[in-house]
Structures are given as C-alpha cells and as structure tokens.
Image 1 (cartoon, helix red, strand yellow):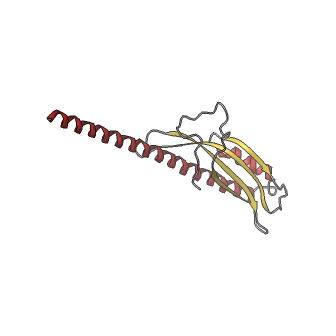
Image 2: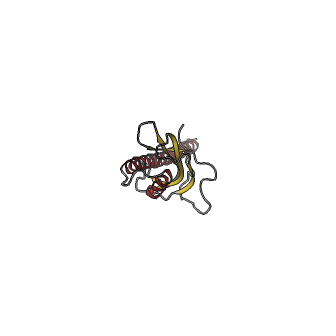
Image 3: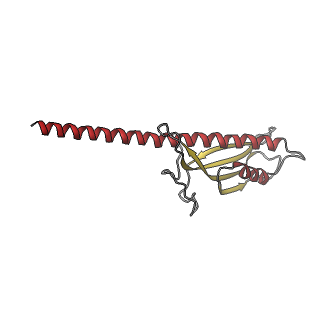
Length: 168
C-alpha cells in the first residue's frame, strides 16, 4: 500500500513538473516572438520616418516614387527580401496612395526565460508612400501576415515560427 501511494505521488510530481516545463517553454517562445515583433515594428517605423524626412528634404527637389521605394529597400538593413514593388502614381505632386513596397524581413527576439538566446523570425512589412492634397509625401509601415510563398527557397531562419503572423 505504501509503495503504491509513493508511486502515485511520484507520477503526479513528474506530471506537474512536465506541465510547468511545457508552460515555461511555451511562454518563452511567445515572449521571443513578441520581442521580435516589437523590435521589427520599431525598426520599420523608424525606416518610414527617416525616409519621409529624406524625401521631404532631398536636395534638388522631391525624389520620384521609384527612388523613394529603392531608398526604403536600401535602408531596411534587416536581411530583407523584396516581395513586390508597385508605383501607382509617379507624379511628384500626385495625391493618394502613390506606391508601395512589400518585404520579407528577418528579425530576432529573446524570451523572458532565456534572454541570452536569440530566436529568428520572418515578418512581412508593407511600406506605403501617400500624399494628401497640400501636404508633403509621407511613408508609413506596417507588419502583415506573410503569404505562403514569402520565404524564398534556401532562406531558412532557425526559429520555430516561420513566417510569423501579426494580430488583426
């Protein structure tokens, strides 16, 4: 009788430890994904702000939309792959949505449990150049859910979450 109780307690203890380990590991992955997402969002927002400033203060007049999109791609510096680029209105005085570029970007994040370990994630970002009447052009950026074919073959980050989705 005593041995049976001891075995049962041991099984319960092992089950509880396994559950705690799984919960901690799951939390670490979620934490690493969120850390990577926050870092990537801050990065693309900064690239958008810097590009807006560059486009408004460019010597020799405002650059064309293709040049702005090229400037974005050149300044992302996050192991990016261009997915698409679309110039909707190349007119420097045009209004509305003038163009956009979509990129797959590699970012890294660390979890709260093992902060020294970096996990790699793939995010997709959309940069859009817009202009309202009477206003200078503005560049905005947002993360979006990567399409299934967003990650080129041979480009394999080591993270478990590829590609990462974004909350709606």
